[in-house]
Length: 449
Image (tube, rainbow, N blue to C red; front, side, top):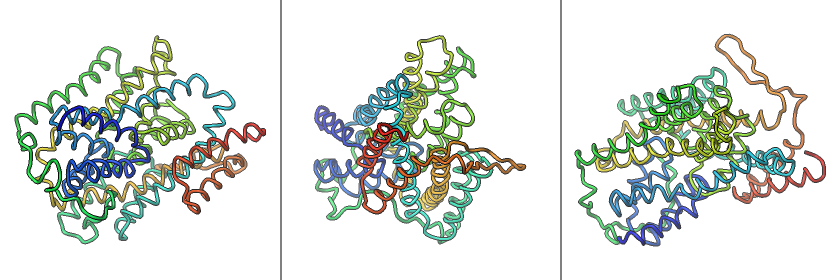
C-alpha cells in the first residue's frame, strides 16, 4: 500500500477517535474493514484479541498492529503516532490554559459542570464493563473483592490486577466453567468482510512471519528508547526529582494498565493525588473531562497529570516550560511501551490463538476492573458532591467518609440532571459533556457557583 494513502487514512481515523476504546475500535472497523477493505473481519478481531491481552490502550495498539501489517515497521510507527497526536496537542493546549486561567470564575465554572458529566460517564463505564464481564457469581465475587480491597484497604492497583490474572489463569488451566471466555467489546457487525476479499488477503505477509532476530532487534531499540530517559533522569536529577518521579511512576503504570483507561485512572488517582500530591481530586476529574472531549485514547489524561505535577514543582525552570516537559515525558513513557509490545509480540501472535488459560486470565482481570471502576466512581462522587471528605482508619481498614453537612447542592443537582439525560434519554458523551459545561457557566452567571 502507498505510504501516503496510509498516512491520510490514519490521520482520518485519529481525527474521529472520540468516545473511548469502544468508539475508537468501531471507527477503525468502519474505515479499515468496511470502507477501505484493508483487512477482513476475522483478521481484525484476531488482532483486537491480541491487543486486549496487553497492558496499555488497546485501540492505539490495534492501530499499531494494523499499520505494521499493512506497511511494515514504518507503517506501525506512523499509525501509532498519528493515533495519539491530535489528543496530545489538544490536551497540551488545554493543560496550559488550565494552568494559567483555571481559577478564573467562568473557566472554573466550566470545569465545575464538566465534573458532573464525567461522574456520570464513569458510572456508565461501571455498568458497561460489569455487563460484559460479570456473567457468573465467581466474576461478581472478583469484582466485589477488588472494590473492597481498593476502597477499604488501600491495596495497590497492580496487586489487584496481578492477583486477578493469576486466579483467572489457574481457573482457565483447570477448565473451570466460570472462567470460560465469552464476549468482548469489539465491533458488532452484520455482513462479514471475508479476508479473501481484502487488500491484505488471506495469507500472511513475509514481514509478519515470526522472526526472532528482528523481534529482539526492534525490541531492544524500543526498550532503550523507553528506559534510557528514565534511568538518565534518575541518575542525573535524583530519584526524588519530579521529572524522575513522573518517568518512574508512568513507566510502572504502562505495564499494569490492563482493563482500560477507567481502571488505570483509579490507580493514577490513588497515587497522583494521595501519594505524590500532584493534583486534587477535582482536578483529576477536570483532566478526564479534557480527555473525554478530545480525540485519542482516554489515557491521554495522564499527560495533564504530568503537566500539572511539573508545573507546580520547584524545578528551577519556567513553570510553563516545566509543565510542557512534564506532559511530553508522561506521554513518552506511557505510549512508547505500546510499540514495544506490538513489534515484539505480533509476529508470534498466532501462538496465542485459542489459549484458554490466557483468555481466562484476561476475563478475570476484566471482572476485577469492574470493581476498580466502581471504586473510582465512588471516589470521584465523594469529592465532587461533598466539600469535606475525611479518612477514618481502624487498623488496616481505611474509609473515606463524607461530612454530610458539606454537600454541594449545585453539583448534586447538576449530576442528577446529567444522569437523567444519560440513562433516561440516552444523550451521548460529547453532548452530555458540552451541555454540563454550559450549565456550569450558566450557574456561575446567576450566582449559584
